[in-house]
Length: 210
Image (cartoon, rainbow, N blue to C red):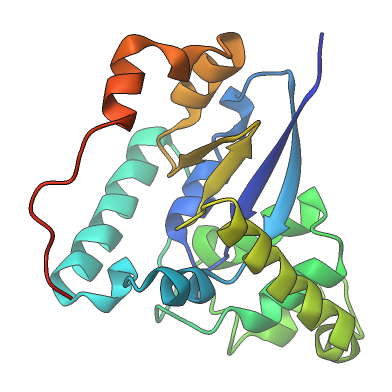
């Protein structure tokens, strides 16, 4: 079986990234995943958009949707005491740990499975990850630079949000795209179909003033 490399761009601030990760057992077995921490706020700034937590009505809708979806999928889910939180320290820690699959999963479980605050409870997260020199790790210039570089690399690929898979030259954004991506693994010409090409060439109509 041919192995396909897929980059998973994520930020621990996203509950949808957690719900996505919890469904990875449904991914095509041919996929080999590279876990890539990025700063969601950096993506938003670059594209000039807002996160769902920045719009009051969408914020509540998003949290409710995550609670409902987690229950439907049988995934443990508990909102942290406040959101959004500052994700820089846990993201930099994961960069320093080479985005190890276990560390990534355990960090998401800490935040979204147990409802813990990774900013105010960062020492507790480090204890869970068995890291006793986190301050040195997250303050290292190379670690800070790598997180910034990851975010720039995501932007260069056209990534606008998290979670996003980059596979071949295509992007799959959101926790509900696993089936779609699996279909693309099975059929590399999926986006060459006439209906897909028509969607790609749809012209702009009215453009909202900025």
